[in-house]
Length: 102
Image (cartoon, rainbow, N blue to C red; front, side):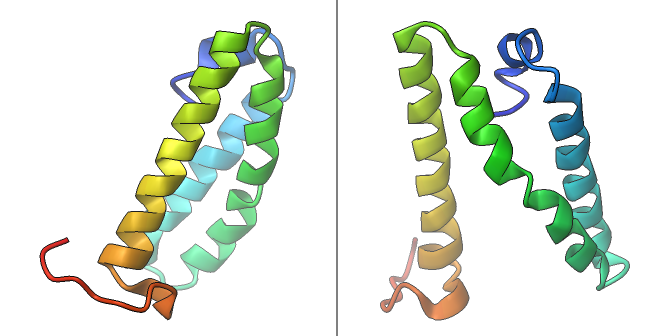
């Protein structure tokens, strides 16, 4: 989502390059987990900045339909993330039932 809305966000915020760097470091270290198990621990420090850029990006939109589009995209992403990680993969035993074929 950050890259999709990059043009609108980068023109209105001086923090955009910083958040992009943090996101890229998080992705890089997450992928290095297959080589070094401790890389994911370091990557978690960079993923915390996601909590900051979502509301910052929401605030950069002026028009109501842009805010609704961005909000809908964030909600859809988080719903897909939840369904995949917690329902389908069964991580953290949050979702109590396992369904075959999801």
